Amino acid sequence: MQEFQNLYEDLFELEDPMDKYEFIMEYGSQAESVKEFDFQDFELVPGCTSRLWLRYNKTFICQADSSIVKGLGGMICDWYNQANDKQRQEFNIETLNNIGLAPILSMGRQNGVANLIKRIKYLEYWGNKNSPS
Amino acid sequence: MKDRFPFFAANPDTVYLDSAATSQTLDTVIQDTNDFLLNHKSNAHRSGHSMGAWVDEKYHSAKNKIGEWLNITHPDKRIAFNSGASQGLYDAVQLIKQRFTGHISVYVGVDAHHSLLLPLRDASTDIKYINVMKDGMLDLDAVNNAMRTDSATCKVLAVNAVSNVLGVVQDLDKIRDICKNNNAISILDACQSMGKIEHNYDGFDFVTWSWHKIYGPMGLGCLLLDEKWLWYSPVHPGGGSVSHVSLNKVTYLETANRFESGTQNLQAICTLPNLLDWLMDNQSQIINHDKEITAYANELFKNKLVKSHTGLISFTTDSGTVEDVVMMLDAYNICVRGGNLCAEPLVTGLTDKNNLIRVSWGAYTTKEEIDFVFEKIGEVSARISKFV
Image 1 (cartoon, rainbow over the protein chains, first blue to last red):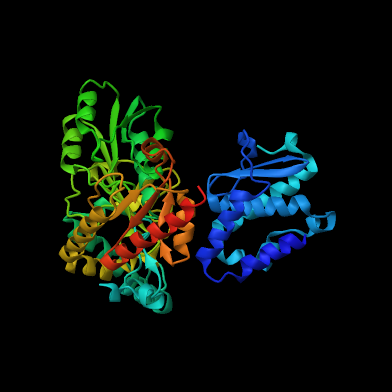
Image 2: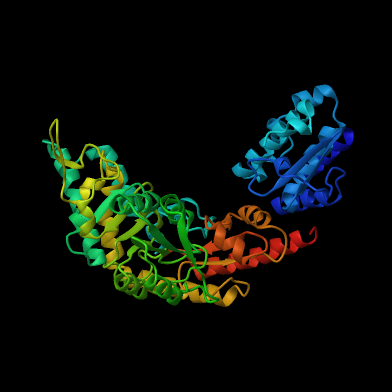
């Protein structure tokens, strides 16, 4: 996870919010977990202002309309895919506060990210077939 | 006029361009709210004490001044306070349902705000959508033609006076005439027109608006109704709506108070007399300022949906999603609104991205602020376009 630690440190060090956004969008354009897939309605994460879809098949992949949301979703999914059990268990919205993401997320977006984390944990436990509609 | 709005002194770095959602608040409204809570908080109507009498006086003064502002006679019979335009629209539809039990035929602008559209859809399964033409005007000739051959028990024409997406002022005189000639009931959502355009709102069955969009307090709206609707029972019967209650009979008030059961939002109502004085004293200046900013924005935003007439301008982004743009503008302390703007049928019909950015202004907005948002939209769009 050192790679992620460096990533978050780089992000945290950027002072200009525009640079932070650009960093996040750039991440989204290259992230392993951001993939084109034929998403279903039930894969839409509720509570996001713009649309974000999440799928779990051993690893998490996501897709979004918004470039910023794509980047955020990609960061979270990539991190989760590589995290160990303990790290996964401890992961929550506070983790994002600690890496400096929170100030640039509107309250609506923070709710969306919180829902993404909740859905990740749900899918990991139950799998896609039992996804809530 | 900016100096009359304390928000801007408290937040000098904020560029507030979301006034169509809610305006910033006039200084007298803030002072009067404080004064009410500090010195006068008591209930109106039938209080024996002097504080209650003070609130009574403010309440009646507010209605009389609204009457003066809108040139409406008998304001006590024509104006009902409520929580906002959404309640006013809902109540209007409920009164129509109470009056007509048969087939209700509804003609509603496709640009209708959800607050107008949804109560109507609940009231009737016969909804006919009025198309918006290229210039943003509703196709009223088509409505007139359709109504002539419409045999429904009740015909309703419901429109926004000004669309909260397009900023286009509809032909209100024509709407009134169509209703008169076809014996149809008229509902006017005046949220985006009230205080922004000069117009006589008399002659409509129902006109609704919210005060928080006209530099006033949150949680207060008005329903202006034709006196004939006083024949019908309150949508929300309760204390304050009656003149007499016995074990077998209820007699409702013969004024619009019958539609205001319970304790009204008196701390908000008590701010209206001074707000209305300011609105009346500055009406020409407010309207002329709006015209100037509207013309300026029309010139600047080449990618606008239609030429705006008042208050706001909407456009799609060249790159990325609206949410990306709005979120990044927020980092510059610029407040604009993006999305379907509570008018999803119109927005999905007009854009392939299903959402828009709306810049909207008020009496305090400067041309420099319009320039600033225009410049920053260009900047953030350029950043986003690298990743789309």
